[in-house]
Length: 134
Image 1 (cartoon, rainbow, N blue to C red):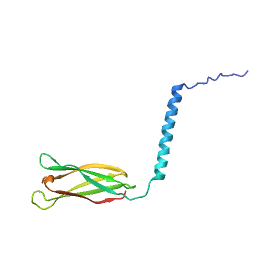
Image 2: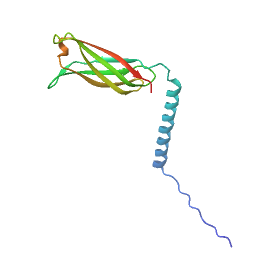
Image 3: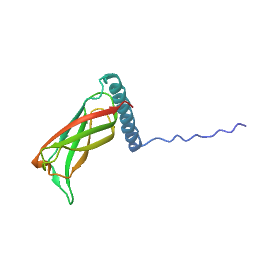
Image 4: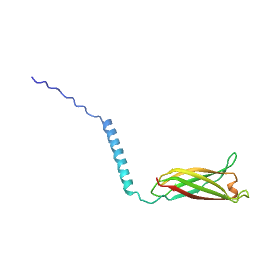
């Protein structure tokens, strides 16, 4: 005598198939984008641009918003930006610095630089002092 087991076959319902399909499409799309991005990415070095916003008074000093953008294809680390204020308050130039720890390709980071004198009464000049290659 042989025992015969009736194997019950469990069928998936439409919701399980829909979740499977959506998950498969998301994974395939993500992998496709990563492969394309890796193949199409250039090898240009970081191209760092600095933009200054409108100065604002605070309790004890003035702050100037700074936006640092990397237009290059490579990441920059330790980006140091210097902002010089000339012609305000009658004294010599006043300098402020901002360091951005990590600036990915095609990304923007924002920060503030503080001054004792009112920057609205002088001229602000930003420049990138340097950065490191990760």
